[in-house]
Image (cartoon, rainbow, N blue to C red):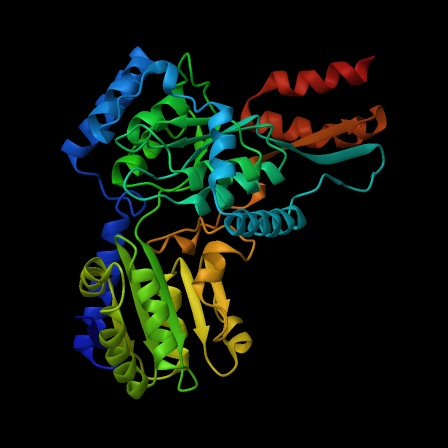
Length: 439
């Protein structure tokens, strides 16, 4: 069911590279591979249609793909329906999402960039100011499944950054409704602008704007291949968070780890549709025990069939020669989630340079990051953690530098400006300084 790779052999090292290449291919758009031409043409057709025809196109594509007879007047969910959804949910659920909201908001405000002022130097004053984006669109997958946690992990950081307008788009069910858990979380987060639209048409509405849906400056949130490709195409007209591939975890473990817990954590990622779960360990006996535990536990899962498929296609148990090699392999994978289940996890953490989020010790499964801890669960996938980072409130800020010189400071720097302008052949640059000093 799950492949076992012995990276201590030449055949195992080749299999390891093939696994990495396969996961990178799944990432596709991020790894630089050209998307399927037919797929891209289909996505562009929907984007162009919404750009030309606006709300009518959004509604037609929603009827086609979601089976929901949504009219233009129905695109935006009335605030009274959001309130009704909030009141319909169990009290315990509302208490849970309120605590999660507070946890995320607390952490995001703590890490928020602050305006900085450099010490004044001989008439030179410089500052770096941060301003929140004016309007953000949050895409929340929906339809057959529903993900209220996505609202908390994307919209709350934007609100913590001070974004004044945050709009939510979620695909409706065939009956035209958005699941009440999603609407209730929007209410808890303080979001009153929610639209019944999903897929490429939602990305198009956010990017280009329609009569009913004002355009945004940034689009965030997960989605299927069509949504990811749509985000890639509109990037430049609007900002986006990332191009997300299959969710993934690497568990880095030694003999102190529990095989049952490692298996449980791998299954928690493999149950995504799709999901990738990889164990890297220098302990062959642990690898054997984990494989047995996976086979034992998977049958009791609600998504057992999809989980088995993910284990077979995207997952592996990798045995390496020692912990140094385990760290090297882990950094090569640059996983979205990294669990370090070793005797001294903080010591190993010093050598980790590439991971979206790290979870230390046996009592810190990925699930705490997915739901309650505070950092956003929107993270780089497919090896992109080598250069990309997870979503934070700071991604909803833009910085601008402020420079102020007095006359003496300008005169002191004039010769350097003249020299550089001369080398670059930009005589007007030099003249803009010279004229000021001639007065």
